[in-house]
View 1 (cartoon, rainbow, N blue to C red):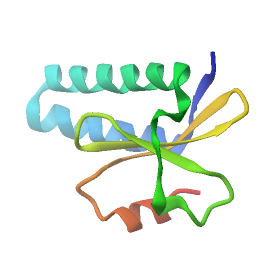
View 2 (tube, helix red, strand yellow):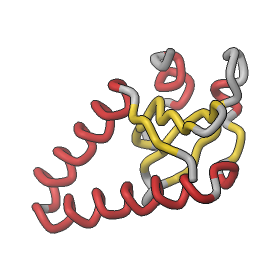
View 3 (tube, rainbow, N blue to C red):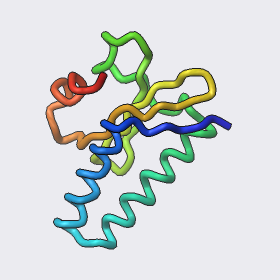
View 4 (cartoon, one colour):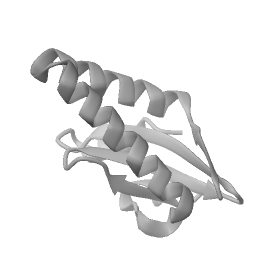
Length: 104
């Protein structure tokens, strides 16, 4: 089974979204969101190619894939051997090219 590594930028994006959900919708909604994030990460461990190749990252050295977590949030990752690096996590309502340009 593959191993997952959350890059700092992705962790920060996830934290910001979780805090927004808590402020706007309450602690229970934040908990549901975090459970969905964990479920998606576990799913990637057993089926890493489930995410589509993300066109916003096509100019990079690595091939980046993304998967929508809960209808509004995107988890961007790359596969390297037996490792999955989650490199970005952002709200799909934001301008996608600007969001993608921030990721290394």
